[in-house]
Figure 1: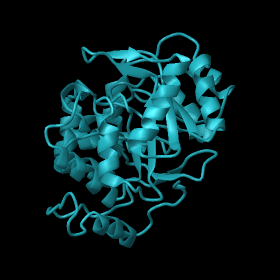
Figure 2: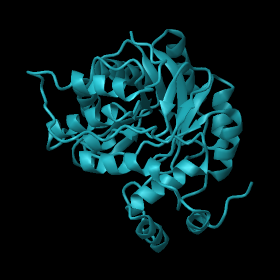
Figure 3: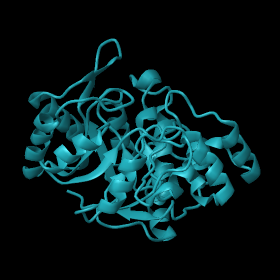
Figure 4: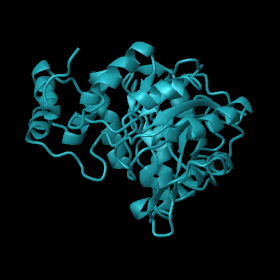
Length: 328
C-alpha cells in the first residue's frame, strides 16, 4: 500500500518518473519533448492529512470515449497524457469509476501503476451510467459500497486516497440530506478502504451536515470565472483550510466565451482558457485545479497557465463576468 505523503520537489524526481515509462520494451514510448516541470501554482496541504498536492492537477474524465462512454479512440494517446502530466509535476488526479464506466480508471492503472509515492488519486461515488449513457444517482448503501470496490479494483489499490460523495444534479446541488450515503463512506473509511472523504456538488447546508458526520478535506463544485455562486463558500473553506476543487473550470460542456477573456488572452499572448485557469489560481490559495484534456498539447497549455501574471486591471475585468468583484 502506497503512502502518498511526499511532494515532488525536484526536477530529478520528475525525470526519474519519466525514465520509468521509457524503459525499452515498455508499452508506450513517447518521442515528444516533455513539458518543463514548474511549481504548478504552488502547493496545498489537505487538512488532517499528510498529503501535499500541487495546485494544478489533472481531471481524467476526457480520457474515456465520446460522451464519457466506452474506450477512447486512441488509448496510447490517453496513456501519454497521463504520463506527461505526472512527469510534469502533477500529483493530483481526479477520476471516477463511472467515467467510461470503468474505462478511465483502467487507463490510469495501465499508464501509472505502480503509482508514484506522492500521487494523490481522488475519485468519486454516488452516480452510475445507464445503458442509454445517462447519468443516474447511485446513493443506496449497496451502490456506494460497490462503487468503492469498483474503484479499488480498477485502480489497483488497497485503499483510496480521497473519495468524494457526488450528489445533486449534473451542474448544481439539490436539496436533501446526504447523511445516509456519507455514513456508509465513513464506515468504509474506518475499515481502512478510504483514507479521506470529500463532497461534490453540495450546498453549504449539506457541507455542514457532512462535517457533523466525518472530516471533509475537499469540496468539488461547479465554479469558474463566469459562474460564481460559490464565492461565499470558497471564502469560508479558505478559513477552514479545506480545499475547493472547481469542476468545469473552463465551462464544461459549454466552453467559456467572452470578449474580456479574449482581450486578456491577446494581451498576454496566451489562450482564453489559460486566462480562465490563471484567474482561478489567483482567486484563493485553497483552490485546486483539475482541467481535463485528451491531448498532450492541450495538457501543456493548461499546465503553463500557472505562469500567467494577471494585472489588477485584468482581474477586475474578469471579475465582472461573474457579476462584479466578490464581496469580502
